[in-house]
Length: 134
Image (tube, rainbow, N blue to C red; front, side, top):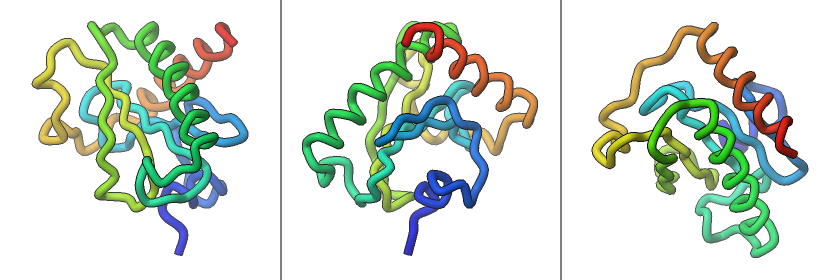
């Protein structure tokens, strides 16, 4: 059975897409820890990040680095925190979260949602920034 992320990748479920290449996709988390919380997901569906073939793993890391750099330019913060958990969705993914202090990187801070207009504008701003540096 396909994961919710595979359904997003296949266009069966909408998302606030930030970036996409032939092996990966990045989109805003719909229950963000902080504004700008992005998920970077390999298109190859594997349960755990370290199950990815080396080429796909390296591709995801490079893709994630590019997304993180744009995210930091768009959302003011001291750094981009990253989390690899993957317990809630059985599809490897990396959380990128703009933070100013370590305590901000906690799922206990997750918001129910952000207004659609804010999500659309934020996804577009990050996507635009990515396009300007590639």
